[in-house]
Image 1 (cartoon, helix red, strand yellow):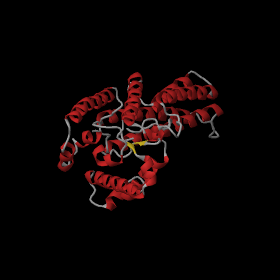
Image 2 (cartoon, rainbow, N blue to C red):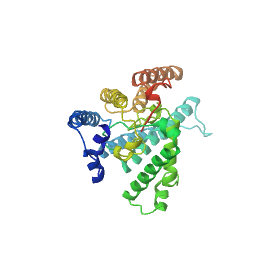
Image 3 (cartoon, helix red, strand yellow):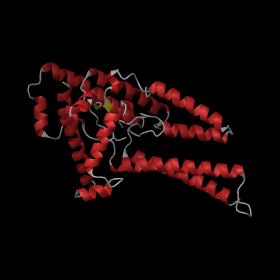
Image 4 (cartoon, one colour):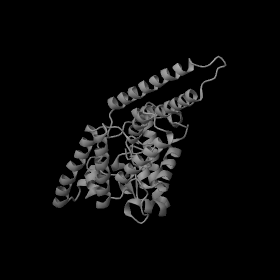
Amino acid sequence: TIRRYILMDAPDPILRREALDGISDAQREAIKFIKPIYEAVGEDATHYGLFLDTAAMKKKIKVLQDRIDKKAKTIADIESKRRSDGTLSVKQDKFMRQLESEQEAIKGRIDMFEKALLDPPRKDFRFGIYYNKEKLLADEQYREGLTQKFENHYFNERLRQGGTSEDDYRAFADSGTSSREDAERTLSRILEEDADDLESIVPSETISGGHKHLAHRKTNIPEWDVVDYMLLTPDAMYSYFSRMGKSIAFAQKFGGRNIDEVLQDITEVMEKAGLSEKKIASIRAGFIGDYSRVMGTYRRNPDRLDNQMAKL
């Protein structure tokens, strides 16, 4: 039933006909029940800022750039106070280094959003993509099939961005890699990482599994294209709703900001209040620990179902 539900909206008419061929009345009713639930999750995630559109990402980039500029002015002010021998006080030097470090962290987040603008996350997810990791590990032909799916997807994405050849793809890619190399790297991450490590729309650099079924779900690949490599079980569906529900609640509570942004705000407030580095580190660790427990991002028992599958 889930397979039919996923294939119903495939752009390929052959796949759509396959979805409807021999479908029972019970399956039709089940699909009518499932579809609005996923649509509701998408609507809530969009409303509370978990799913970011182009305008929202551009707005975040501007806010982050303003923070960099503000810190740059403070750094310039410190520089203007150098002694005649070109040195700064220990306190000034430490503060300036801290500001420079914060600038680099913010630049990293801007870079993340700018890359996302080239390939915005889809908001029409039809099912949580949990790959059948057990079968992928055991079956080489099965692994190769998924690798080819990723390779074709990556290459076609680059063509849509103006490329015309594999050479253009290498020019677009961050490290000059080929579409095949990127596909193999994606598969490797699926096989090696815990399910939570592949889970976020706007990924977190702080939290493992900070929400990467949304870092464009790593590939932004549509479900219908990889349906034969997914776990189409009730457990996969319940896990998706559970994690999305928690993530939407976090976004609702903190105005659509992710864990990195919230931590940065907390840290800056504590620094301005004059708290010691040890105290700041302790409070940050406590916040991260609470977040991880609530969101379920600690590594689980390897025998549990959700640790046997990887989500993208």
